[in-house]
Structures are given as C-alpha cells and as structure tokens.
Length: 465
Image (cartoon, rainbow, N blue to C red):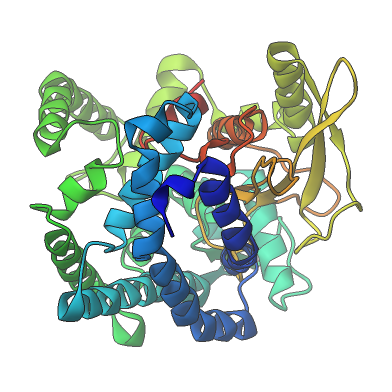
C-alpha cells in the first residue's frame, strides 16, 4: 500500500497485536523448559522450535513491513512521533536488518538455515549442561569424608540423600549426597578439608558436557562458525561487531581498551593477593602449589582469620522470609510501592514458587506482578539466576508487567526456612533490580517498556543499585 497512509498506530500497534500471542506462548514454554524440564516438554520444544523460528524470520524479513517502518523515519512522518516512538522504530529496523531483511535468493535461504541451526544448537548446548549436572552425584558414607563441612551443608546433603532413596539419612550419620548444583558445589569448594574431594567436585563441575554423546565441544565450534558467517552475511566484520550494534560500547576497540585498562590496574594487585594467599595456606599446613580447587577453600579460611568473618555464622541472619521483608521494605521506601503475597492467584510450576503483586502505596492500584522461584532444583532446573519477562506493560494489549525472578539458592531443610549466604542475598537483590525496571516502567508501548528497547549492556545498570 501507499506508505503515506501508514502511521505509528497502524504499523507498530497492529504488529504488536500480531506478535503478542506467539511471543507470550513461546516465552512461557521457554521459561518452563528452564525451570521445570521434562522429557515431554523437551520433545515438544524441539518439535516446535523450527516452526517458531521460521515464523519469526518471515516476519523479520517482510519487505512490506520494512518499507512501512522506513516511511516512519521520513521527516513528514517522524515529526509526529514521540522520542519513545522514534526509538521503537529505529530498534525495529535494526532488528529487521539482523533478521536478514536485506538478503535475497540463495543468500537469504542460507542465512535462514544458519539461524535455525544456531537456535537448535543453542538449545542442545543447554540440554547437555543440564543433563550432565543431573547425572553426577557422590554419596559420602564415611564421616572422615565430611571433615570441615558446616552443619547446614550436612543437613542439605542428608536431605538430598533422603530424596534419592536413602530414607534414613541424617545430618549426623549420613549418608550425604553431593551434587553439582550451585549451593552443593560451593559448600564443598569453600569448606571441605578433603583436597581430593574438592578436586573431584571441581573437575566434575568444570568438565560438564565435555565428553560422550552430550559433548558440547563440537557444538561450541559450530556455534562460532555460524555466528561468524551470520555476521558476515549482514555486513559486519565479526560477530562482536554485530553484537555491539545493540550495545552502548561504540566498537570492538572500545571494549578492548576498557578490558586492557582494567587488567593493567588490577593485575598487579591480583598477583599480590595471590601471593599472600599462598603464604597463608603454607602457614596453615598446605603443601605443594595451590590448585584451582584450593583457592575458594583457603580464601574462606583467610577471611575468617583476617576479619573474624565467617559466612556460615551469617546465615541465621538471612532466612529467606526476613530477607524478602527487608527487600520489599526498601522497594516501598524508594519507589512508593508495596509488595503483597498473592499465592494461589496464579498457577505455579513448583510448590517452591511464590507469587506477588506490586501495588501503589498511595491508592492501592495493581501495578505489576512477579513469580519468585528461589531454590536450586538440579533434577529439572537450570543453574544460575535471571529475570525474564512474562508480560509487558502495553496499552495496546491491555496488560501490566509480570516477570519471573529465578534464583538457585540454598533450599529449606525440612521445616527450617532457607538460610541464605550473603552471596545469595546479593544475587536476589540483583535480580530484583532487573525486576523493578521491568515492573515499574511507565512506558505504554511494549517494545520500549521495562527492559525492552534498551542497549543490552545498559540493562545491567539498574540491577547494580
């Protein structure tokens, strides 16, 4: 149609109505795959992923849509747009460029095949890591094997043993099951006095998905090839240059300058601290060089001696309910919101998951909602911590923000609440920072609300506060 007949509403708003159902449905499936993996879900995801990728590519390569968006950049059309709307148009056009809208014929066909393979291999990579994490465990039966481990770790390991069939397992008598999920791994690395056990767990953790059918090494090599080829197809010198086109840094050289500057400032101090750590370990009876599985253990002992700091002694001050009370109190003070439990008002994927509503403190209006999935579940949940979108603020779709806050913290032990390490508290605050940016946005266009439409390195700034 004649481009002059187009305006922001007939292009961007109508496209949001078209995209939203697929985006939401696929987003939920992707989310569940990360936090509640099952064979059935994995098979369904694998079956549907090519269809979804092809649909997204078809939309991203629409010349009619591209031409309509380009019209919105003309002087006549752009003068009617707000700054937010201009940013959305610019971002949409960049996304379409990266989707290959400028490609034709065989080049376009090859590009689409590479994008599909890239998505499939990325999913397979994550599957392999999860499978390798689940496949490894050690059952400790001899009390000599638990030397140095704090009571909270022994309680966690005994609970894991009971869950896997050792119904008589206790903190005092064992057996104790050690896995590769983050809380379990860190307890061994920081506190076990058995160097051979630390070595075994360290090597198992850092060599996950590196052999056999689940070997990620050839996948990594192929992913690098695909990313290089995709960048070249789009006119970029490297994939790094392609990636930076959506970030704050000006170019690859600017990133290198920053990295080298930080190294120059920090490296000598790091060498000095490493030498101090080696001398400390030697003074306490360590023999031989410090290995990679020794650093965390001796760093903890050094902090305890230098600063009378014991991470284990802090845990009783950080039960999850008390941490949430403090976190929500800070949010209320800073942003004029109150956060209330809404368990039972939304379907959840695990009994550990909590659901909350964010309300305006002055008029009690409902601003946003979020799910909190706080604990590690190595049997079906990916490691790490993240915030992801469920719904955006959108006037067109009539939705308010909903997000997922995912952590992998220490689980509760029987009737006791989760006692968090300081690192886990910091991680929860960090992810909540992301969540606040998503939930408290006042922008009514989904493409620019919350974390959308923002340079991806800039997304990390609010979470630091």
